[in-house]
Image (cartoon, rainbow, N blue to C red; front, top):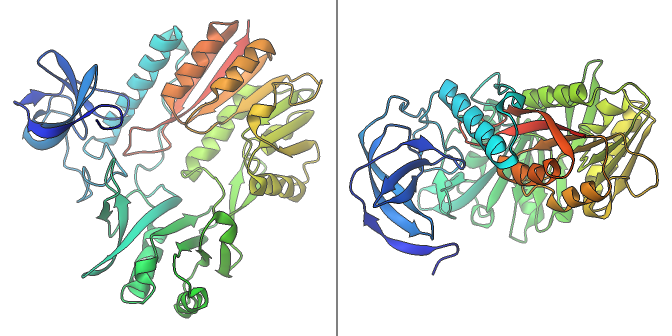
Length: 437
């Protein structure tokens, strides 16, 4: 018995026709009255597939061959698309990706939250469907051919070698290529399981080399010798072991009109699509509709991505975040931008009721939780309601679960808009406004 279902013996299935796409990116077909999910397929594809997992209400299959492509299928530009786990929809034109993201997001909220389709706004497309990622975690291993780097195959720990990732910023691919050449035949290569890459709004690049060996100074000397045009860091264990050996390891974003500068450390959370992040912030500001007298509570505030733009338009903003480094940067960013009406608290969000741990009234609650959502907080928002909520989400399934609880207990979903932060994948971000009836 495998986790979540029976592991099949990759049983060949008769030819199947994909009928639609579903959340998670797979195509849906039917066989013997059962639903079968087949990743990396398009509507209308006639396919050969083999069964890999049988669950109670559906089965999962692996694509073997395209017998007849559907009208929406194209040849993926990347040679390892369908094998690498980084992208799921390269076989769809970008216009079709947007169409399906809009459709699936709308279906999820209207069906699960019982809201009218008219409250769902058109998806905000990305400026560029390629080279948009400002961060990437590259997996590494050593073979007879040398030092290999790439991404995990979907649902596995097998590394697919990727020479040039088409969704990662070009300057990061160039940096990775230099690191591969430097490390390829070194004595350090087989002790490096991962290399993190990041870039910012100024074009500055940084790389964190994860190292499991003991000769930290030897590796540092090798990395310095290459005179790479980037900040270089080594992490030899937990995050607290992170050490900059070249540069300061500080990246920078510019957001809002009348620019706000946000600094953050390599390894801290920041959105991977920098231009779409600015659009996301603009949307939050617009939906917040602040008049200058409001008290705002920003949960999962990070380094102030939403807090500081909102603080310019509110009486006070309190940000709550569990990561100490993010809170430290939020405070520094407030001082850097001379924004003095903020308070940042390092604490688990779950400990803070909508009142922010005080008896003060909260006029607006903003939250941007991780992919798991914020279900416990939704229960608190029923017991201690606030007038207006702006919910930023990166997962429509946990978003719908959370919103359903609120709309069934006195909140009205006023508007919701998906944002395509992640072209070539099925993922999308969203911003939703709720008001207390």
